[in-house]
Image (cartoon, rainbow, N blue to C red):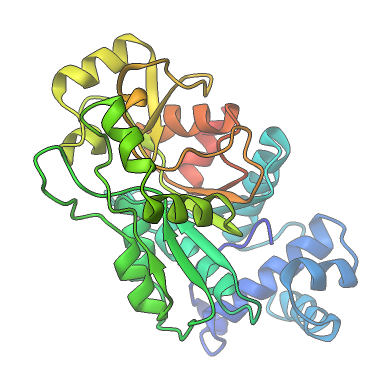
Length: 327
């Protein structure tokens, strides 16, 4: 569904009710009373039976979540999700509440992304999940409930090797596959090759071609959205140098997804490191569900550019970032 938000909280007389159940009731109440959906439509959007949807709507009333407006933090999140969906033509948008005291780059969105992943991995029909790398995605994978998914495939969009041969601490695919017990297909390459010719030689290898083929046909793709500000992840992980960052900034680069740098309108930067990026290039505009998982003030310009450039058809972020994107 488009606006699933997890916000576990117990309060007052509701302490005896599971917090997730209250979230589901709040969600159902918002869809029915505020958004004007029928109970059949509520059931479809929540992925539950009509009877369950009816019970959730009733709970929203009995637990006094419904007054003149929805008396639950999820209401604001859902309103932001609806506005972002309309503005950027998104297929999926999940907004989690912000914690103004937290300094984490992934609190809330990690749990939201993990919930979305688990929902899809419970499918009995085999699916291919493509995934990038980075701090937010690693945090999401660490939130996954252990599953047995030998019928699915997990494929990487990007390698995790720096120019000096060291590996990034924020590689995701092995941890992901281990958590869900699914076959996985890593990208055995540096993030950015030394030369364009070297990159082309890498992609001529049969094993790499197979990984690329899987990734470009994935049922769902999860990516982080990196900034290219003062000390971005690409620089911290030694995938690019200070000089390369300065040149990218001078060329107008504000963000990157799996190493591909783009400007404020979401257009790819011509040449420079993009000539040497050894990761799967996403469609632009995306043709398959591609979900960005990112939040924070430093990421706002990059996320906005990715949305403008149609790099993403889904977004999981927090209230603060959503408000900044809409301002």
